[in-house]
Length: 442
Image (tube, rainbow, N blue to C red; front, top):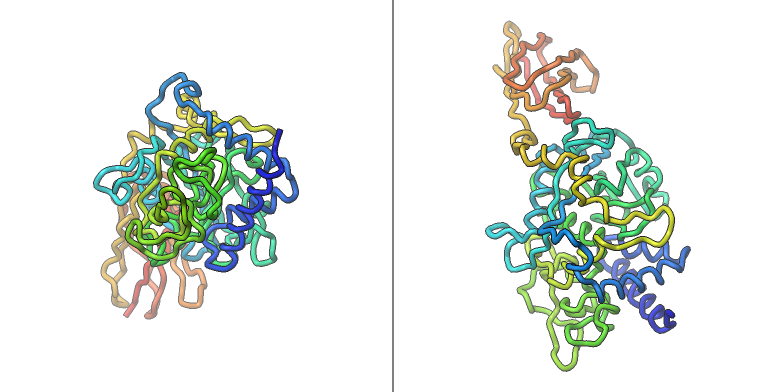
């Protein structure tokens, strides 16, 4: 039986989180979207309560007879762009996968290896698409839906519009959509385990994705927005879910607050870089623990985040074994299996060189060039296939284009001559990455 008191506590917790988001910067929409959906389908509160009891009694040894040492998750990144800076490079995507692995594996000598728990969860860019074809785990789709508003407030595309553009089977891949913007200056959001198939996954604004690039948010430029959202995707909640319990040593601490016992209760989100233990917004008895502002599930700036706790790891492992209760919901029980790793190309990933995802180094010479000489373009082709070169004038008019079917290696081509002016050389690779260089004719 489910107590009214428990349901009331859940409502208070989520309403508190919603109000915090509205009063301060809207970093993450996960709780707000869950709250809206649960208002339409109250059974979600019962499912959450049952999952919390599942976590409380979870035994890794009983749940996973293979005694695996790591859960390995294939990822596909869908870049939704309108030919703006949100069309981020493959190298920026690669950097985000590096951050996820540093944070979830607590790799020593990296920003994620400063004392947080080893989560035993690894991520890789899929090397096989749903049909078994080769892929780099990155898709690119041009669409105005890159300006996104999941709440449907007429400030951007809805979830149905955005995710209807492209989606790989969520039971086999972690889908991440990278967009230009999310309404209310939101950094990102995710859906918890057992969400509906058509919405499952993560959405992140391009300015907070990865740790390299020319358009990153200066406070959130280390890739930790995606670490935070993947935590939600694995059923972690914000650490600032109020002073309602959930503290180490309290009975049933898995059933209140953020539903994790070793993350001290916190009344409000943190937005500043504080030394660990530098803030305390809740009073606990008999031991009063300070807020864990360095936790990935707070709103602390990226450079000061470095911790998952053992309790959070246990909850994430339980989420990977959770059984969903309704038709159309997506669990995580197949995504890390040996069968799925073979189907999504994990063995190919292990043999992938980082150079394959690096931004090509383009050289145009001479530049500037005189009216009497032709400029030459040269760059290293890292992926075989069709590459397009095009030249545009300053008004945006296409003057010339040509498609080349190239193999990996050094590509050199003499460009056509035009009259004295500025021009833009656009190079579109076989992976649909686009690079633009300015060229000058004297």
